Amino acid sequence: GGGRVNKRIIEIQQLYDANAATGELTSFRGEPFLVSALRELGGSTKRIIYETDGHQEMMTADVRQLGILANFLKVNEGVEFRHLALGDYTQVPLDADLVLILGPGQTFLQQEVDVLKEYLERGGRLLYAARPRVKSGLEGLLESYGAKIGDNLVCDRRQSVPGSLTGLMIRDFNVHEINRNMANVQIVMPESCTVDPIERKDPKWKITPLAMSGTAAWEEKGDLGPGAKSPGPDGDERVGNLKLIVAVEKPAPK
Image (cartoon, rainbow, N blue to C red; front, top):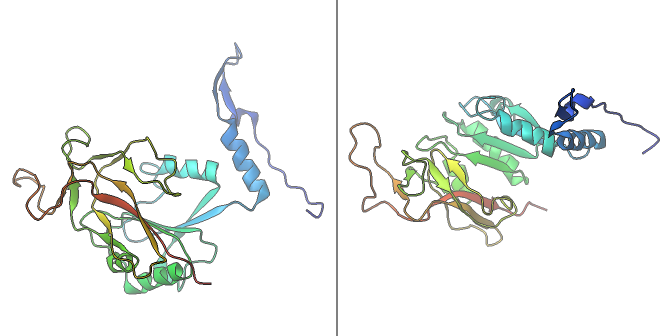
């Protein structure tokens, strides 16, 4: 608009690999580069994800753990990742499309919890991945929104990675906007705890289990370390399709 022109140069070598002698095309990767360029030129579809830092979280900047995923989201979804040191903020930045907290190993301070709560109450989005049997200080906040993190480790002898009770092979998904592309797929969750929907405070809230374990799984509350008794479900431990991922939707204030 206004006679403005935006330009972006893409080198032809970025689009494909080929044999210079024969002209044979070995791989074409032009589509994601072109889509990314169009998004940058349009300037209106960039998504800003803030990931908390300072609590031993997994970070997208760690190429050994999340590098492939982070690069895919940057190229194909126009995502920009930014660090968020909650202790330095009185509120989450207004341009945040999502706050990401991946497997924290240290406790969040109450001031940080309050910042997250204020963000959620004004319609923010949070993706939280728990590290089993590690208290993060966010359990109470999550329960207030209808998701209870279990103090357990989910085990399965049948639907798991060979040689591992806790490396779950997940095939059971609900239909939801968040995981609409996960039907008929299988993912591995190396270690998981239960995430249970709890009674809603408001009937307008929508709480949906997104992924469940296999029917032979159980919640292990005891020790699985060296010298522990032979693992198996005890009388007070649930067995069956245990909830592992839950989505909570609360109408934003008008």
